[in-house]
Length: 386
Ligand code: PMP
Ligand code: GLN
Image (cartoon, rainbow, N blue to C red; front, side, top):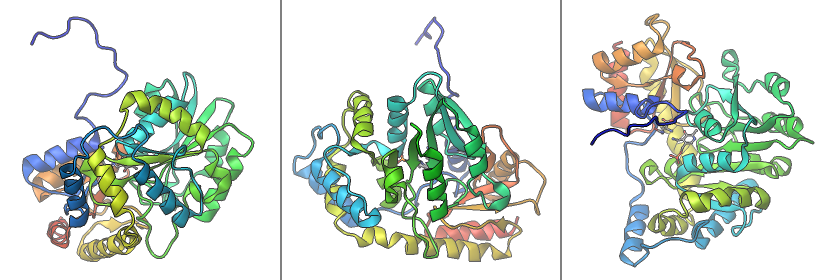
C-alpha cells in the first residue's frame, strides 16, 4: 500500500515502544521467563470462565446498555458499600469500561482542558502523561520520595498546586513501587484539596493487593475525597483476566455525567458476556477477600527464593510487583541490565526508569510475582546465579 502522502499529526511516542510491550516481546523472542509485564501466568477461576461461556451460549451477545449492565453496577455498588462504607448510585455513579486504562483516558478527556495542569507522580504508570497531553493538559510530574520507600512527597505537591491545577492523579497501591497509602496520606490529600476545584483521579486497580494486614486506604472511604474523586478499577487485576480488559469508574453524579458524555461516543459500551458473568461472580465475596493472602504468599515465596541472590529486595507492601536493587551486581543502567538479564540469564524484568518522565537510573528492576510457584522457582534459580 502506498503511504499516506501528507503529514500525520501525533503528539505521542511510536507504537511498540512502551516498556511493557518491549520487554514482553523480548521475553517471547528469547524464550526468557517473563516477569516483566504485569499479568498472571495462571487462569481465572473456572467458574468465572464457565459463566462467560454460559452467557455467550444464552444469547447475551449484543450491545450492553451504555454505562454497563445494571446488575453488574448494582453488584459493584454493594461491594463498594461493604468495603468502603460509601453509597454510590449504580444508575448515576458507576460506569463499566474497557479496562482501567479506558477509564483513565475517558476521565482525562472529560475533565482536562487546554492549558490545565495535572499533577502526577514520578515514577508513574505509563498511560497518565499521554492521556493528559492528548486532552491538551500539561503533566506536572513530582518525584516520590525514593529514599523513604517511595512515600508521597506532600510538601512538593502542596508547592505545585496553583490556579491552573485541574487534577491530581494518584495510584494506590502504586505501580511500580508497591507503595501503599496510610490513613494520614488520605488526610493530607483531603487538606490539600479542601476549598479547591481540583479533581482526584484515583487509580486503585490494585485495591485488593495490600499485604501484612494493612487496610486499603481508598479515596472512597473519605466522604470529603469521594465527592471530588473519579476512582478507577480493573477486573483484570482482581480476577486474573487482564486480557478481558474490563474495568469501571466510580464518581459522584456530576463528574460521572461528564465522564459518560465521552464514554458514550468513545466505546458506547463494553463486552456484554463478560459483564453478565462478572455480575454473577461478584456475589462470591471470597474471590476477592482472599486475594491479599493469595498474593502475599506469592510475594513471600518469591522473596524467600531470592534470599540467596545478590539482588536487594525493596519493601513490597502492595501490588504484585517486587522492586529489586541490583547495584551489588553491576553499574549498568537498568535498560542495559534488563536487556542482558533477558538475553544472558533468561529472565525478563522491567527497568524502573521507564516509569519516569526523565529516566532516572537508580539500578532498580521490577519483577512481577503474579506467577505460578514453578515459574517463580525457575526464575529465582536463574536470578540467584547472576
Ligand atoms: N493502572 C495501573 C496502575 C496498572 O498497573 C494498570 C494495569 N496494566 C492499569 C491502570 C490498566 O488496567 P487495565 O488493564 O484494566 O486497563
Ligand atoms: N499494567 C501492566 C504493568 O504494569 C502493563 C499493562 C500494559 O502493557 N499496558 O506491567
